[in-house]
Image (cartoon, rainbow, N blue to C red; front, top):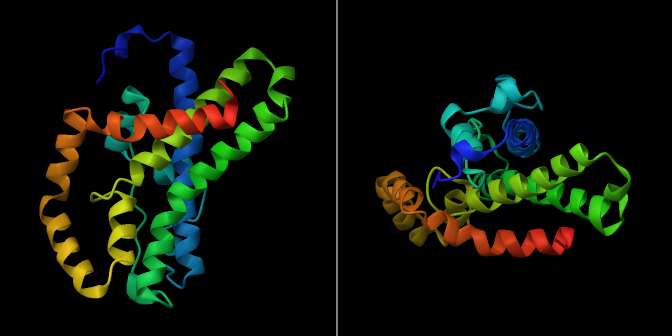
Length: 208
């Protein structure tokens, strides 16, 4: 997983760290803002409706993103679904908001930077940052859409299922989710799951 870990030049580390300081806060801010919009003030009361990286970085999730360059997560945004105007759909929207925000940011950067040709007129260092931002945002979004707790995809899946099935699936996921996620990460299965769609989206956005 980390074969390339010690082969990265200092500049690449700096670009990756900067990209994370943008991508993770955007992801978690989207969760918090959507929760407030849906009727739950919990995240706002804890100061999470902000783009301040210090409010959103999770040590383990950031470590995973920093050293894998492919997947990871931020500090979970606290929500109380009973405060939502619609508990079921509120949870689905809040969960989907994080990955959607990263996909949107990647799309905006790709279209403006590459499809409109803006990136050709900027410094090479900024070009590399834009490329890194697109890749990190795509990886963060797709990884979090995997339907395994504590990732966003599990909450989206449960929220979209009929009530009876949702209860059964939620019970199984809560019991075995973390173990399954650990297996996926350690066996590199996450790379096989999100690598192909990530590569396709990256090529579509950048033409690279």
